[in-house]
Amino acid sequence: MAKKKAIIPQYGTVTRCGVLYYRTRIMDADGKQMALYATTCEELYKKEQEARREVEDLIFRRKNPTVAEYCEKWLYMKSATISASTLRGYTNAVKNYIVKPLGDMYMSEVTADDVRLALVPLASKSQGMYNTVNMLLKCIFSTAERNQLLDYNPSAGISGKGGKPAQKKDALTDEQAKVLLDTVRGLPPYVFIMIGLYSGLRREEILALQWDCVYLDAPTPYISVQRAWRAKTGKPEISTILKSKAARRDIPIPKCLVECLREVKAASKSKFVIADRNGEPLTYSQFQRVWKYVEVRTAKERTYYKYINGQQIKCVVNPTLGGHQKNNPNIVYSIDFDVTPHQLRHTYITNLLYAGVDPKTVQYLAGHENSKTTMDIYAKIKYNQPKELVGVVNAAFNQPIAV
Image (cartoon, rainbow, N blue to C red; front, side):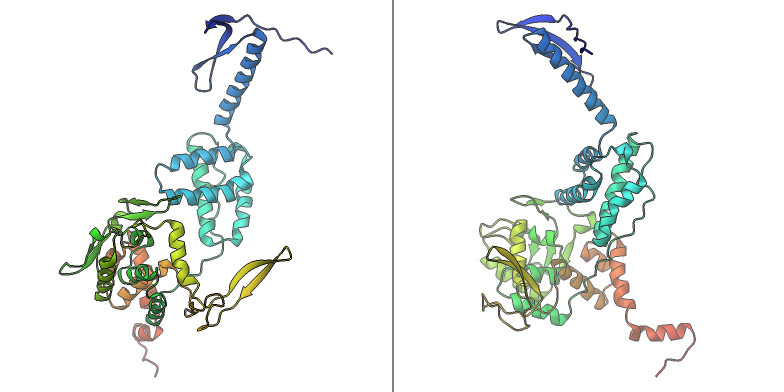
């Protein structure tokens, strides 16, 4: 059967720059008129039909977006209320664990089973990652439901429990702290570690610390936390917006840290306590290189790859405590425990509580907005000591203490 020939409408004309054009107008997806031009009626007719299809498709997608499209929109809306580093974390989690399994589906097509299946691969990930993705799913779909894009929220009622529980790192012992400081003395991470161990500042607070907030000559020397470091591509951002209101605090510092900072300040030409060779705050990659001075001195198993005859060969090295690195004999494997930047802060808080400092005071010094964070550490220290609790327990049950 012969295809019916399209009836080309009669269009109006307009002269532009001495050239005669045919013109028509259509409504775009926002309800505004848009003009289309062509030199022939046939060409304009094709343009009109194509434009109408695009408008219809856009209107449909606005009412029925795919998961990938709506996730992109949701992240853009969230970018106004969260930090750049948080946005990067959310973006990576959404891309890898939401868009990858569900991205091509329309939001209205997603069922609770689809959400559960998307969470299955996260069972082998950390509990923190599982909780983050679960939270993002609930936020994204609940936002779509409030905007009347969905009749129901498929993520509602999905269990928030999953993933592998994280192994909590304990505070460093006094001996471990001494080994760590002796190992990096005179090396780039030394000042960072001193500030972390003896003031409890967060990483972003240490890297943003400037000399105008370090009061070494005050009757009681102290550090005033007023700025935060934000990792960005290229030059980092130093912001006066802190993690919470509680993060803005003044912290008295002990004599050992005062002496360390006096020495650093005397040699410093930067307004930052910790700076690169140009006096600027460290970038994320620069900080990673600084912390590498600690990591390469730990006696833990290492894996690396090398190519032999075009084949990638996996190599495993097990350093011996007290031994020297083969390629650089100046590096001694003197650390036989794991240590992270956050452990420095955790050690500071733990030491305060061990010393009997009131938990509310510790909460202030640590900059904890929620007292639960401080009390969880306090409870672990106070109540995880059977020898000290045996008298309390026996007294509660009117029992003599066993000898």
